[in-house]
Length: 545
Image 1 (cartoon, rainbow, N blue to C red):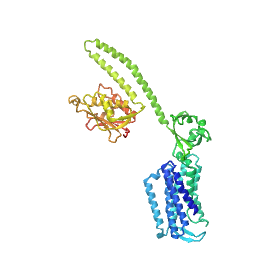
Image 2: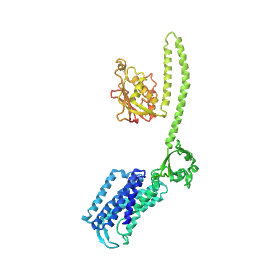
Image 3: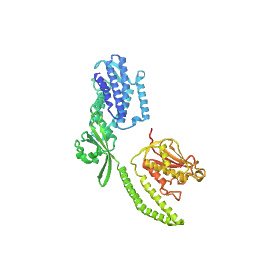
Image 4: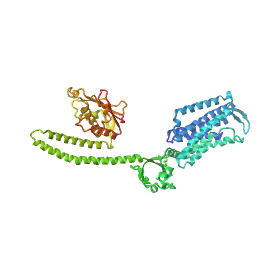
């Protein structure tokens, strides 16, 4: 009786310590396990302590019910601790509740069917209520052990995957099953009465996890959830433990537990706590890139150190570096275009202006030459813009759609067209590039979408460009009520050089597409509600005011 009372006290006293476990679901599972096991131990102590036969039987039935509920708490804890999501599935929860209700009903109705247990008072080894278990009891016990074994399997699999020293935790888990030995001894000696002893094992497990090995408990959980190489460091940056993948990546780690990280892996130690978390490793003729993620380890107030995780980002990093090289080449090309072509173009334009000034009569050929040179200059400007607008953004600023779109409208020769801003949308972006985006779309609408009868003959009152947020606040649109874009060519409008105007360069909407890509957004072209063109920029994350 005292042992079960002590087990209950230990389980309940451990509850505050569980709050130091960082993972919420694991914390909930262990808390539930301690509550049910402690209540189970209370029921056993009550069964042994009360004098009344009726009360004894009541405590025994309560113990049977609470004891079976520990299986649910155990499985919830094992699923959460091992990184599974089985405890979150509603279908599994419903099955568990239904099974628990059925077993409880069988136990509560035992006085009617007498198939679960019978009880009688015996005098040896002392006066107590002796329980004889029957068929339904053994069926329930078999089911309980089968379900409990599922939890053990999940834990053992985690210990194997963690590839770290989990011996103390393995011992604690084994202790939770040792009371089964006592259950077996019951049938071979009268020294122990026929009662389940599992609460004792859970009490020892609770003390071990929450008071002795709490930090290692979380370390193993973190390591088991990761497929990446992991190094555990002490607070003074010494190697505390490593997993198998870390030792494969860095063979020099083998046998170096306790050694300073700086002496074994100086390149890794150099990057800890710096702004450059990318580690470049050359091996076997290839180069791999790893991102270092450092997380503090320790559930108690005294932190144990850090966990260093190495995430392989080789594909992403190689793509980024290749993109940087392409951008450098593009910038070099743009500079060449700007310098090597603009200078002779300016000379040709200057000479042509002198000739035009000397001419007394207008010359169609010279005017055509002047138009051709102006077109070349416009092409150079657009090529430079296209080369630079798609480069990565350095920073973003707060953009308010209403005021920003209006300011951009005022920078464009809009003839007599009107702007209608329909709704506010606040987001972040590059003001310089977005100004070019709005201006290019405005010009495209006015130059290509506005028909003569709208802009010229009707004073422009009929042609309107509308700007507003998308319905789901995931971006914004720019639309007009002009002639629209044929569905046959909508897939081509963002292609460099594509234009339906023989005087156009075909780079305006291509530049728009590059600006959108640089922001990480998407742009599509559809027909507006008025039959014109509608540009939708989506994937924009709004800012709540």
